[in-house]
Image (cartoon, one colour):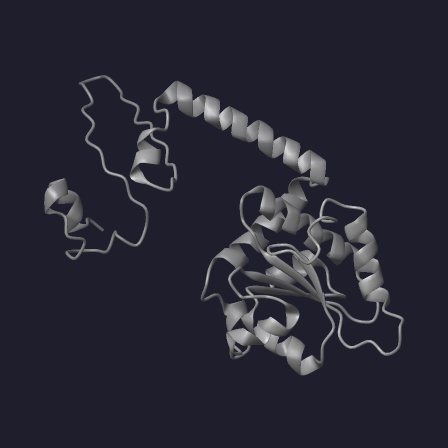
Length: 232
């Protein structure tokens, strides 16, 4: 397709004519390539709280390369600290995409409950919810994945409420919750229990947990490998 917008001067673009190009981030620049020569167009994108903050950012290839180098080093250190390998990172990136975007098929399986259904779990609903439903037997591999993914997301600046729903277990024996507690105490999430954007337990009825699931951006279940659940 040849969008009409691409043939107009920048000041004339109204994003209403021709094929739609306003649904994505698009950059436009004019480049003159001499006969027999070549040209390189370099750009980078950044986010800031205000236009003034963006204007203060260092520009240029050297500044961009230095920023990317520091970012790559920080990313490697984070992965090493959290014991995340390449295959695990690919899964956690899938989880992040499932959490960040609305309107995905897995989010329409249940009619959404009222937002105040989260209040009984101590959640305001202001942050995305990652729900992990556990049965009587603790699925330790899935618990470890959820905790590592949650810690990795926080390191990227994405705060998510991680809730482990264990159901109403009879008596005082709660093996799933005990297993989660032990893994939290031994990992980087030990200071995040019960805080906003942290980790929580919820022991409720099946109806209450179903309401919570209807409001979750992503729900994982014990008993099935993480990769299989994300591929479904």
